[in-house]
Image: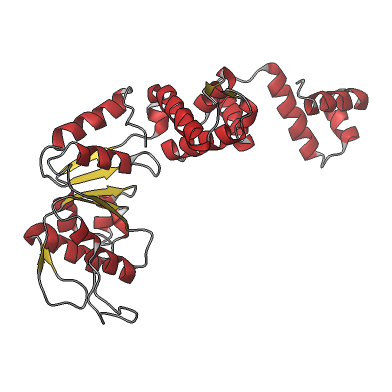
Length: 310
């Protein structure tokens, strides 16, 4: 796992707030788009807390059905449900004196939310099917890519739990808003995956770097990591070439770059030709007549475009 990169103003603000809240025992709500690095920031907070020497436990609230999620979070006693042949402690007990990270907490059922609220207020709970009250001391860090305020308004999330979790809220910016961090992140991922897969790849080529920089990264840092891992695996030299990047990324990056500047005359003409062909349902004779050129000239133009000559 790489260290958090925070060279951009947006990411420096998020990390700065995390550093200030880490030594306290306050609950933290970390918000941000999927793949933006919320779990990395949660681990960062734990590593700089007074609980750093204890266990960091994570549970994904979106990955399990409601009943199984409660069993995994709170644990259960033998006979609590079909298949419960023996007692099992939950993630809460595993996080005693440490930190519990609740990923995508918006998916927690209302029943589980009520039980979690009791944990926060009284530091106690019972396992599913149990009567013994268990005391627990765990710091909670909740992660979400959803609008919890909106969920509260829709009565899909308890307002009292929201305010208990939202003692300190830290927003992790998407990658497109922290492009100053991109070069360092890219270098770190190239090094990490080259070591993981035993490759000699050392860096991105200038062309590959520029293409990635022009890409929007809807999947954020996680998507960047996946793209670079693939590129390192298929790369045959010391540098990741543009051709080592997925075609979908190359196409999207080029399209975005074109949108960010006024189109050239050649691009406008090419677009007009395509629109005319579409309007004539591919009839080149009719299209050539509308365009005011010969059919031969139209064929030559289309052939040049197929070869990428514009």
